[in-house]
Image (cartoon, rainbow, N blue to C red; front, side, top):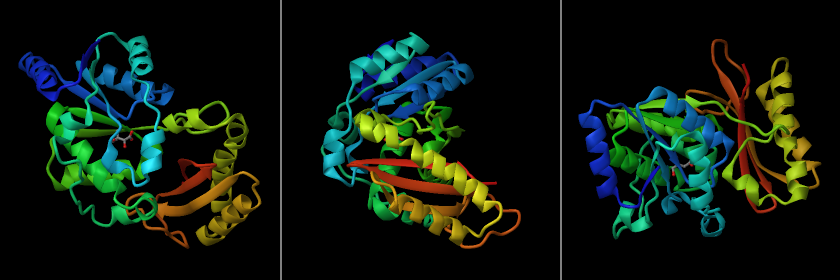
Length: 282
Ligand code: PAF
């Protein structure tokens, strides 16, 4: 396991690997790694000759300063967890200055409107921050393949759009959501849930699954209203949004069209912890 804090050193190692004709995978993370990340790491190890895992809590994608401060930082534990997958991983764990030099700010992107919906609506500037860091990581690491979880489905769509619009030579590999036995989607934020909220949280996936069944016979609008009423009656979880959207445009729909794939997207507050999840509906 080699840990790099400076991109200049990492780039030397990558140059060497590339000169040997090795393929390179990248799993970008913000640390606080869990089994969901490990499944991406395992897939990337299987599909590439070498692997970089970046661990960097990116300040420009946090619209809420409190969320940035409270985001868990567990580098030692993360490295130990990565070692359980392989000792042959290059970890890039830079300080903010190594990535942003003296200007900690986002590039403004046009993602053809994908950035204004759902997460973009509730977290202004978030996707400019994501686009900025991911593009920068792609430039530093120059991976052949980069792996992203479908829990952040909108992020994945935006990264695909960025790669397409800016002709970035990297293959984006979407990876399925991993869930706890309770159904709760794995997330670095879950470690902050108190036992009370942890016990309540499976309600999110239960409601998503129920909405999928309802979507078989009811209009999207009716399903959305039903979900809203479920959360209104919930004593702990506060719904920020629930929408049913076309998976390609991320446009919210009221009524379904034929030959179109839809997903349900949800964002919920469990106390001050924001949880997101999504589920394919057809
Ligand atoms: O999904 C995440 O953990 C982050 O948004 C990412 C892609 C690592 C960029 O900071």
